[in-house]
Image (cartoon, rainbow, N blue to C red):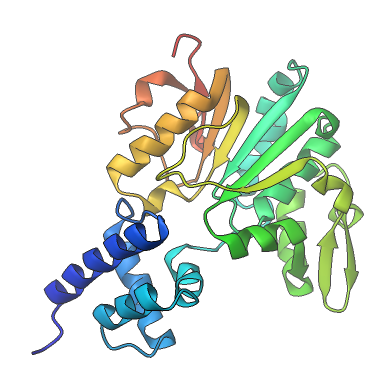
Length: 277
């Protein structure tokens, strides 16, 4: 019988349910079309012709799931990605953050850590890092390890540097890393202000009161109910008048929680929780 698209969809639903029941990773609310593309790529990696075969491996070989997780989660980021966003944080949000005696900042879905290190550098240059604690979370353990290491191929540095400059960098990005053997490693003193932790926007709850949450290019991979759950977590976690930053293609416009936020900088997708929310 030919392997039709409908068959693939059924197998995909069964695989996602199996992953949830076996490993408690919940991809049921993820955008199914995006998941389908990533699973189609994964089939070749695991020498499987069908998702049913892949499901068998996932259920009976515990070593397979961590490898499959690399396909199920998107690991694309950059230092000071969308420089205009970081410039807006520096010029418009930081002056307000200065009014707090201490700061808690949540980078949700931190991937390989590029945005975490970018935020730490920005805070250091603005004199806020010493009173800040950055929570960097993701569901991918390998991504968290990479993020915590802060090691990147040196070929990426020109792009990092260009973004840093366009984001209003106060000095030289090279002041924050050392280079050796074709790689750069970011200053470990930045690391002292970061907590890296496993956290799922699909299943976990809030864990602290934040002044700023940055969750960019994550909601686009969720279906609407899961998007609403994630934004609800952010709304619950933010202090009154706290800030939420989203990706350039993301918006609260159709969110169930849109009424709880003001559009602080609409062009940069930076929102502010209302005082009475």
